[in-house]
Length: 129
Image (cartoon, rainbow, N blue to C red; front, side):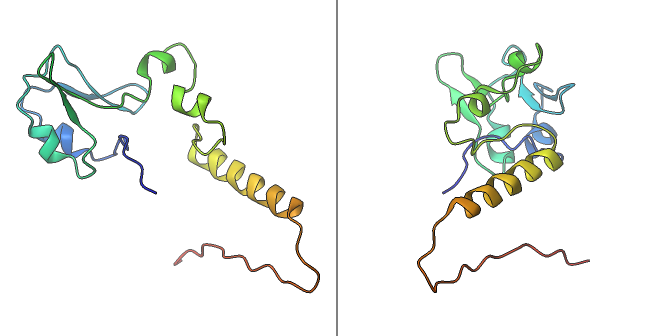
């Protein structure tokens, strides 16, 4: 499975190559394309290593996920996170999302029923430090 939405990169290649300054980092630390400033040159499409920027053929400008900038402006979480039926899409500080994932995983493992005599093997990530 692969995610095809904007990663809102810390060092966003699309921002660096945009000749008009149409791509900005917002107060929420997200990357947004201002369609009224975009000239449709497509440099950002080439500059994005994840291939998530498309062209709006009607307006002739680049477009991509804004991480629901309008919703975040009024204190709401992005729609994808809110609507995800399995809670696979989490939104919030990285540490709290990681903690929620661990708790959900641990809870699901406790509920699992194993056949008598079977063993459960788990893998944990180890840091290099």
